[in-house]
Amino acid sequence: MRRHRGAAAVLCLLALAFPSISVASPLRVLASFLPMYLFTVNVVGDTPGVTVDLMLPASLGCPHDYALTPGDMRKIASADLFIANGLGMEEFLGAPVRKANPGIRIVETAAAVPPVGVEGGGHGGVNPHAWVSPKSAILQVQAIERALSESSPADATRFRANADVYARRLAALSAEYEGAAVGFRRRDIVTFHNVFAYLARDYGLRVVGEVETIPGQEPSAGEIRKLAAVIREKGVPALFVGPDSPPRVAGMIAREAGVPVRMLDPVATGSTAPSAYEEAMRRNLRTLAEALSRP
Image (cartoon, rainbow, N blue to C red; front, side):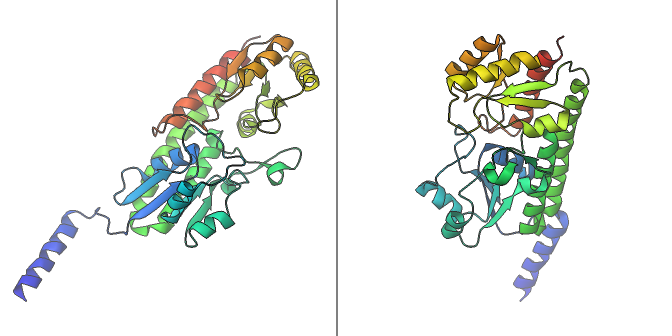
C-alpha cells in the first residue's frame, strides 16, 4: 500500500511540475491536399500525440476529378479527422470516405469563407478555390483550430495559441496585399485557371478572362483569338499562368495578345514546409505588383 501511495504521489508531483503535459489520446489527422496540410501543420505545431498526414502527393495539385486509390483508403481508415477544402473541390468526399472509415470526422474548411460564385454551375455554382487569398486562409485556419480543439480538448489551448500566431502572420501578409493594391494602376487580370477569384475579390482585382474554364480542356483557336482580344481591349499587362499550365497554350495566347507570361502560384503544389504558403503568396504579390503598377 505504501508503494502504491508513493507512486501516486510521484504522479501528482509530476503533474504539478509539468502541467502542460497532454493526457489526450493520440489524434490522427489527414489533410486532403497541400494547402489544407500547410494550414493544419501550423495549427498543430509540435503538439504531442497529434500526427498530420497528407493524402495527395504535394506534386499533384487540385484534386478535381481525383479518384481515391487503395493507399488513400488505408490512410482514411486510420485517421480520426479529415481536413478538406470542400465546396466541391474534393469530389470524393461523402460515401467513398465514409465507406473507408464510418467514424471519421470530415471538416470542410471553406464553408467558413463567404463564397464566390462561378459561371456555368460547376461545383454547385461556387468557386472552391477559397484558400488562394490570405483573408480566406485565416478563416480556414480558424475552422481547423475549432475542429482540432473539439477533437482533442486537452490540447485546445495549444491549438488556439498556434492558430493565433499563424493567423497573425497571415494577417500581416494580407496587409501587404492591401498596401500594394493601393499602387496598382491596373486591375484587370487574365489567368489560366479560375483559381484567383477570392484573391481578386479581397484585393480589388477583376478577372476578365480565363484560358481553361474546364480543367484540362484546352481552348480552341477561336477561343484563343477571343481571349487575346480581351487582353488587348482591357489593357491587361500579362497572362498569368500557374506552375502546371501548358506552356505551349500560354505562349500562343501571349504572342497573339502581345503580352508577357507571368507566374502566379495557387499553392496547390510545392513544398510542405510550414512557411510554404506565405512564401508562395509573397512571390505572387511581387509578380502582381510588378505587372499591375506600371502605367
